[in-house]
Length: 161
Image (cartoon, rainbow, N blue to C red):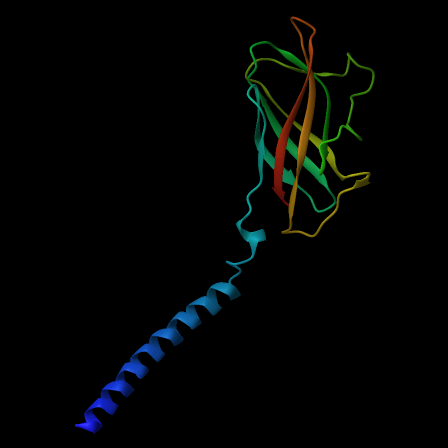
């Protein structure tokens, strides 16, 4: 009777050992494919308050962002300045020269692609390709009908290319 119990115990251990070995191999292969690297999972996105939205965002490793902005406010607007910073400041914002003649005029439903240098505090942002940038996109605009200025702050998450 004793050898049967030992044989059952050995079969139990062997069966579960093979199962654990298969699970370990699957985890190692997933790790090798980069599934557990957060840089592979992050997608670029830009979240702005109602009225403006980002159609697409690309961020180069030198910190230069290319953003396609969609205008969905109630009235036409003039973009007066925009900036990208890791903290929520308006330092180093890009302003078109000789406003208002060079301001970007956007009708309702129009979109415009602009480039902006992202900053990390007081220095230009730079990182390695595949890493993530988390910061803020600040857009200043003026309503053309009322002349009221607005400042919109949105969150920007981008995977560096």
